[in-house]
Image (cartoon, rainbow, N blue to C red):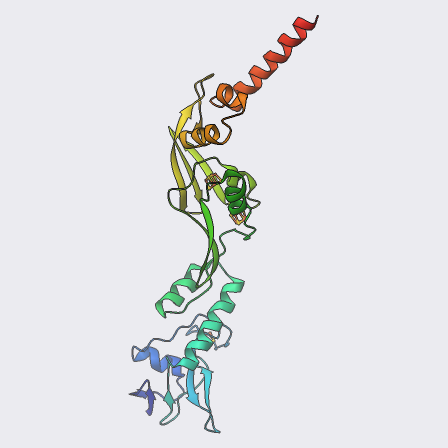
Length: 252
Ligand code: SF4
Ligand code: SF4
Ligand code: FES
């Protein structure tokens, strides 16, 4: 048997065992993905790094799935040096497999901060800009998080106009009309949930009360607003076609 010290704890390991195997047998957790007990180690994932003293005395990180036990070897599995290398290794793997829940769960178990999975937002800010500059609802903003910038709602500001969803080049903002409620959301996060009103022509639900109120306020002076803003696009088209036909009939 060989005595080694892992995280200040004396461990009795078997000859020819790797540090990872000895740690596992003694309930000491080291993250690993490419190790398999039936196969020769390959050192590919780089997650299993541990800190040891090199022959020159310098502290270095070595792969515990490859490194063999040695009498009185002192091993640290959670030093700052190990944590830095581990974070780098996790993020490198996630670059290749960003949606892997196994890697993300493992990273969480070892408290490693990793980049969030891509949510389809290319950070073009079109949604934020149109909501601020044209709609003037200021319902969206970009926030910096530890893991990168992302678009988030300003609670209670969305009027449910749908302009952001129409402009979003990657289609990650969704508008869902269900019964008498419109929900605007970005991924799983709700931007606004608002009651819908019926078109005064056909009776179909078509726009949110907040949006219609907003149109009234913004375009109060325009003569068409008062008459037509409570009609859905199909009914407005029908009306204007009728008006054109009527004008042509009078001309004749
Ligand atoms: S749906 Fe809401 S967030 Fe989108 S542009 Fe309209 S007010 Fe802004
Ligand atoms: S949600 Fe869409 S429109 Fe807004 S920043 Fe992201 S990609 Fe651009
Ligand atoms: S388990 Fe993948 S490098 Fe050691």
